[in-house]
Image 1 (cartoon, rainbow, N blue to C red):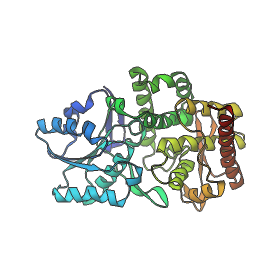
Image 2: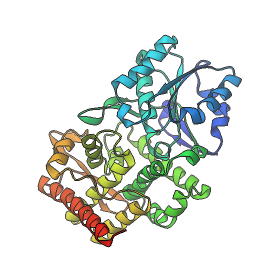
Image 3: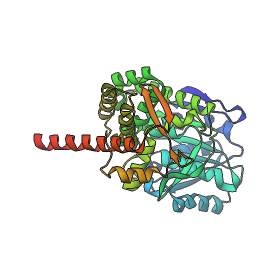
Image 4: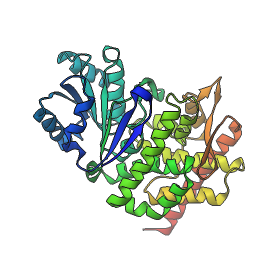
Length: 374
């Protein structure tokens, strides 16, 4: 087991990374205020890991309530959130109850938001079971639900008491979900660690094959970056915003296509390519830099262009992004591999051109594939 810490003073917490951690309830017990927990999971993860976690807690005389939600981004809304509140109230869970989120990013976001809201705030623990959640969404206290007009627009900052990343759970992860998680791993290399980006270029096949040494190291390095950024800028007033590389474009894809049609990591990969193209148009990246980013995403099994919605539709959706400030959209762009910046500099004509360039690139690729035949 490897352990990192998110340094937030009295609200700081550990991130434990390793195999078999679901079978170690002793890691959870010190973080409980009372001997009662509510475990929130979904209908996919529940049959795989819920009983294993609950059995270990019950052996330690912990009273466990389980709450199983429908699976998928399409259910990350008020209606599903109320299922958590209904269960907490029905079971008369008190303020000393700890909520445990067992699942991927959707479960973690919804469980965390429920914990932030129930009785004005109860403790919660993150047990992420997807790569995306282990390297990104479980760390940092961002919790939210979606609105039909915008992704993650309703939520709260509410830090967990503990993150328990059992990397053994990744063995049951579908290949598409694994690739989606790799988008967030690649992001850390792009925004602040060019050496990590180069390592990923060498080791991406090992990561897709779930080779333990490479996977554990990539998760630890990603979490270390996230922990450092959160400790420096908890509520996203500065550096933490750089973690949104590709997200402004990506959230437009998720909202515009309907939640759940594109996985979050897929949308982020396509969005990052748009951000890279915009950076190139500003003279901050060269064509080979953009090509390297695209090759790595493709090797990770990720798309390098979003759906052809047209630049006006993208811009309409992006206008509702959380990074709009004083009516002006701010972008996370790249001044080089490993060097991200936040800027309002791009003209909307350049943004539209970057979107259209990626759409055209994808159209050319599809045409070439069709002409080459089966």
